Length: 225
Image 1 (cartoon, one colour):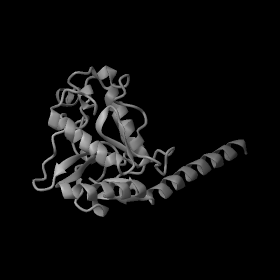
Image 2: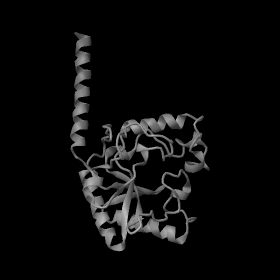
Image 3: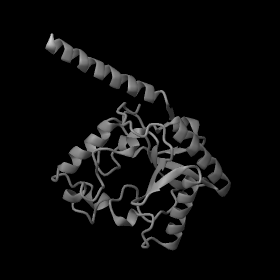
Image 4: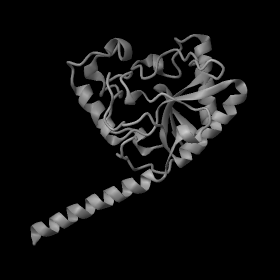
């Protein structure tokens, strides 16, 4: 009876977790479909990322966000349009299994394939210590987005002074090394996003999280498809 009770408790816990995940997923939208003109370039679906391969949990190049984050991002896009600018997203909701995949990669010091592009000035053994890799990510809560500005006429990305996911202090919004124009572009992105209720991250010019996010304590793990 004791083992039976334990098994029942385990099943109940699993069912509760599954129900929570399903309920959360129903509160998400495909931002690429709901935000007119949004450019979607989901880096972890492909190989153009710091891991150098598709990441676990990304089965389609789809930008999923909570309804609240999607609505706020739509307002940002609309307010940029009169200036000939738009948004390009690199990552949106990120399954917890993807974060776990990053952790496995970061512990494999033999894999240095993307060092020259993504972390040229950082020893891979220090990625956890310096905060570039962690066991949890705000992206898994569904209201965090990585993005940049694009020129609507040409579709080209606006110069931000560093590439996406560059593990370097050059990526800090406050870093003085980028050109005056790149710093102004970073400031424009910051103003557009914070003006619609997002907060920035001091180490990454591309990273924004919705204030008052609906699932502040939930780290989802349903796949992106």
